[in-house]
Image (cartoon, rainbow, N blue to C red; front, side):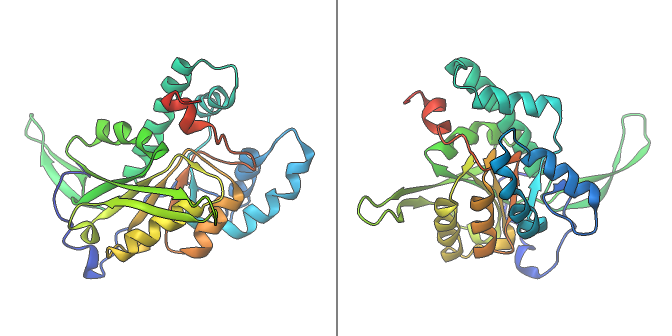
Length: 262
């Protein structure tokens, strides 16, 4: 499993593993990638068209989108619908979280291996490198913890509490707790909604202070605005962002709706 609670000894060795690729948010060499992003960013409101070119041209391959299908589109629709009951909202949010977490795990490094089947045949497969951890940005990021634990029973999960200062409106860290060897691990950073990107930027700075390199951080989110994703990538060009949708309007009610505090 890719998430056993063991150290990743080769993170700092300089050896890089190929990353499994999902649909890029931008690719200058592929017209199909650009058209798929246009489908994700499209909206019935013509005013959105002015935002799309900037998001496509500047985000680059650090931003990865789950392949869009009818199942994901329906989950996105139900989550955005103001008439959705809380029970349906949580159910669909958990399903979408699970899809994002599974693809996030698919971005982790792996090595080839050979196993013997019960019939005695040799099977050429792969095994994931061990030594990863999750970090949730409280409060809404905690909604994604169970989805990660459902895939990785023994994974360690750290927490960061960041809130906006009432006077300056700047993101301020109030609490941070990580595994002691977090600097040796690949980090799955969980935050479902990327609106301005300020909270995530502050969280990444805290991780860097604890020795984590941005290229070892995979940000898992459900929805992102072009501005939020662009701000994060401009600040940390080596970070990987995985999301289901980039759209000018993000469902910022997610945390309150999920935890029933709306």
